[in-house]
Image 1 (tube, rainbow over the protein chains, first blue to last red):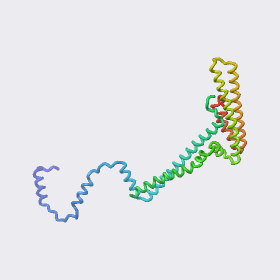
Image 2 (image 1 turned 90 degrees about the vertical axis):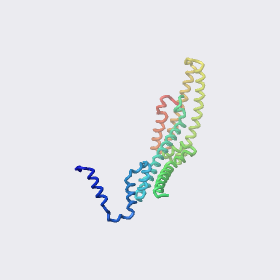
Image 3 (image 1 turned 45 degrees about the vertical axis):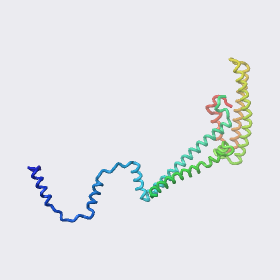
Image 4 (image 1 turned 45 degrees about the horizontal axis):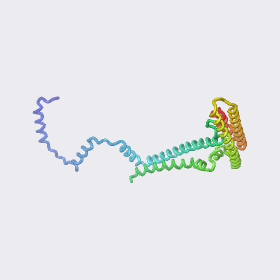
Length: 113
Length: 153
């Protein structure tokens, strides 16, 4: 509901505020706390994704169970990758040596003769 | 150093160590085989599960075969050179060319016969099951392969 005369209303408010006296004592470091709340309410600068990731990783590694899981997973991944790569290498060598064996027995096999 | 950094590094080191360890363990035998005296025969021994005695016998047969094969290859090369010489001086099939072609084909047939005989000898030296497998494999790679639609060797 709008007041009938805003100028009169403002004057009355100012008078009431002038007469208002706070009797209670402020808590210690009240002003500092207020400034902190203002700082917190201000928008934070944009944090880069990788920095956020590192922060999250560091937070997660604070938990021993997650740290153990992380090391275990990487170890298993290393084992699997090594096993797979060894299989590929063995298969490649088998193929090479078997071809060389055939080539020794049949030297004219692939050359037009 | 902070604890999370240490954990990060420990995880990566563990992964690399696991990779290298399993890779080395899985390929050590292959590396030894490849660096040996006759890696092709070492492969044959491994592939067809040959005993030491079988391997020694097959190695001897292999050496004998290669010596004969080199001699036959030399004869084929000489025959090819002679044929090439004849082809340069004419543009028709002369009796000399016809004779050279026949001799060349006979030489190749002889090579194939010797090779097939070597396969049979080797397969008989192996345990029966492995011998059958060897024969099927080596014939598919040589006399029965697509590249042998024409006679080679």
